Amino acid sequence: MTRVRARVLVIVAIALAAITVAAVVADGVLRSRIESELAANDTPVELTLGGGSVLWSSLTGTLHVDAHLDAEAMQDAISAKVGIGVGDIAMVSGAIIATLDSGPMTDLLGGDVALELAPRAVDGKLSVAVSGITVGAVERGGTALADRIGPFVIDPAEVMDCVAASEVVIDDAAVRDDELVIGLTVPRNSASALAECR
Image (cartoon, rainbow, N blue to C red; front, top):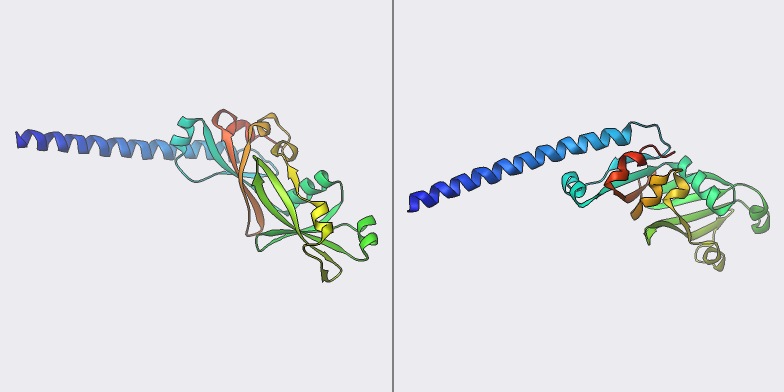
């Protein structure tokens, strides 16, 4: 009787090992295929697969995709959203520093204006709050003006011109190195269409 149990346990262990290996291989093949789809098109926003099992995500119907926005993409998005020309953008210490193009705002405040912006995910969208203002060389963080300017919300569909972006939910936003990385939850059937967004 114990020999039979031992054989059954060995067979079960071998079967579980085979299933595990097959799942890991399938996950790798699926990840490679989806990464190729995301990288195939020349878009202003680089899209990469997030961490975790792609096989499991695919079975549940959603994928985690990271959108990488460089300074130029952020400049365009912020200028379009707030209606004020944005000059240089720098991404440092977890924040976005945006200088406003000279104009009425710089004339009104009496010097070059730089806004420190703090991005985060709120209700499935990107929220960008003004966390500090510098006029000339003087920091004016926490002023009433900063509270009046922000936060403003950027919907993925506003940044990427396509239907697939309307199905995207933003889960996370963080400045890493010299880019803004936005974590997105994307319906599996929209992942390849998202790569075609402009």
